[in-house]
Length: 267
Image (tube, rainbow, N blue to C red; front, side, top):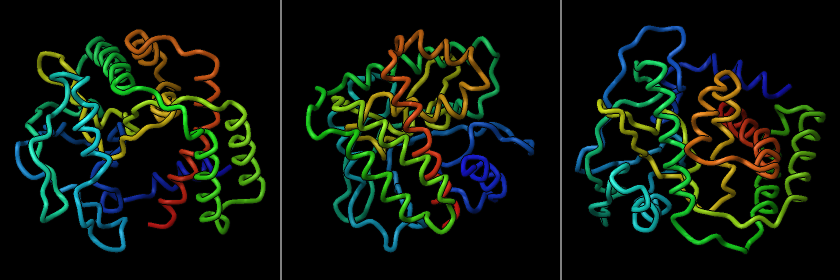
């Protein structure tokens, strides 16, 4: 199936082929020291030119919007926006130092505590703005899925395309579901742990209104499957999921995986 081929493709990628914030939550196969990730006060260039035909002409609008409207809900657990550059695609944020949770060498009990904090922070972020009632995000996600399937027709089998479409169809049957502010890359690489155990959130480049459970798709499919203790800790902070949340995760996981597979195959 495409998901197993996606994993195999990811294993073949060299560090040069990975985007700046696309490192795995584990550094498997090589020894490395955890790097201290600091968002210093100054220009945060946010250049992702390897995915664009030309450099951005302005600062990332979704990230700027998130800083101006939603990150205040996280209090001291996120950087603050200082300024937006008008002459280059850049923003200025306050410093937030710490180790990426994906690379921090901490005790298991500390890791569990960090995931509980992460759950609390994501719940706060999801409540940072009023829920929308239009448009129906389930329909939009199905349309987005069709776009990605059209880009992958030469590398996906007919059975694989049919499987993803079936999930998208099931997803639309759950709607309408009011979207909320979402991070959309809420992974250990974007969670910083300080020496006192406090957790902070960074990288709001992809933030927008979306289905709340979409923020849990990558955690559920890439981490929780092998670490149920981290799932339990996270949900102790976030709150219990209902049946619809579980269905959203189940139906959006193929979409998340196939888009990553298609992007990787094109790189």
